Image 1 (tube, helix red, strand yellow):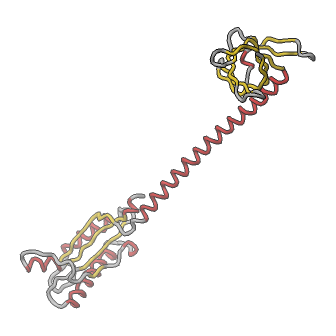
Image 2 (tube, rainbow, N blue to C red):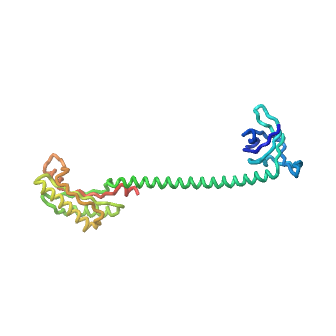
Image 3 (cartoon, one colour):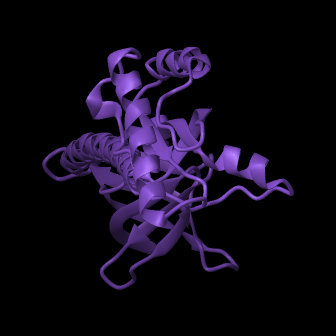
Length: 256
């Protein structure tokens, strides 16, 4: 059998040929297969070549016999020298294109990885900014007051100043001050007492603790809300006349 076609693919001793009649003809190369390049004006001279010359894109003429699996076992393969040069040029171009394609693919994968990292960073930042109302409590001091009084007992000043010093070592800290009053007396008076107590503590932190105003949350006057319950009324009232000072750190800031 003689078959003419273009080498479509080659893998070891197996060669796929595309002919005008059949899209794929499987050709088997043997050690005894003669590979030659026809030369001269009349193409009658033959130059023996290695099977390595049989590359995709090369037009060839194959002689041989079909085996039981309908594969053409080649006894000889011939091709023209000009055709080999053209096929080699095509292969060189394909190699360069494939190399560029691989480089482009690697660059694309690198860019995708960078985009994924950026997306992850944006998602993380979004999550942090979504926690602006959520704080970690890093320190807390409770200041108790005498009945009807708003002045800070001297024993609490070292505690408040220590809290202020500690706070200023925390990134993005905020100071929260909330004043409370016992339920004894009128609601209006107790509301005013809680406000004055909170303001006095704030002033101490600003003036003596050197806390910047921007790091202070607006003081809260809680009045009679959140009463401490105990079995002893006198003890309960003493604990309710209080100001609670907290050092807070935003969870979003803490996550940066």
